[in-house]
Image (cartoon, rainbow, N blue to C red; front, top):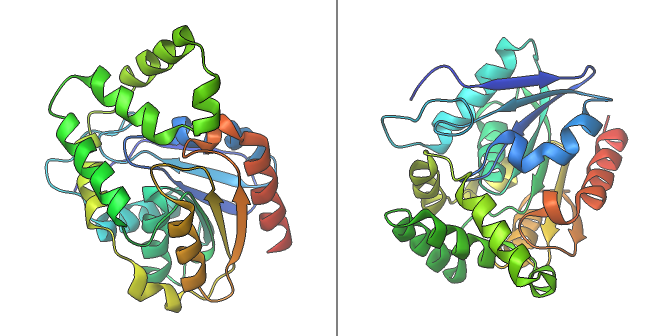
Length: 256
């Protein structure tokens, strides 16, 4: 795996390491929260290979490799210990960071996450991988369908829907293939009982890509995990940023 990851560090206070989702990047996934979190924390955002300004990896990605790389990047940024805030695929990266580096990780925030794929998600990931070989606008149509809250989707005008598809098609990162291949391999269930740090699991209850049941299963597997549910689709940062920010900042404040 490459060694130099594009990194954005902002704010001051206890360190908070961000782990983004597949086919995303730090700014796209956490953008609405970064400035708010930076008021009380040193926020360290790391773009995976093939996202943002980080070069694409010449080899397959692994949870171990990503977790180690993100932790090493946070340490280089001056953070000795930190909470890891994972979104979607980033929740599995966060869990692996906590179990491989317990001396570094002091807490977890896991949003729209999963410890394994169910059949619905496996079908979606298989289709996602297949569509990466074709027209990016067709892929963007599928991802808009799968990741958007059905209630919100129904309210869009035809023009707004096409605009959303165009915007997404233009931002699909080149490393998506490696990201999605990694999603397909995730199974962190065996390590969940070993997590002993304060943990918040945020489920997205109208999520058609990663079901809320997978998030609830993730929470049940972690001793003492707190569960918060927000009525939105997978793209919580666009659909419910204020609610998301509130539950996360409350947890971070209370778990200090």
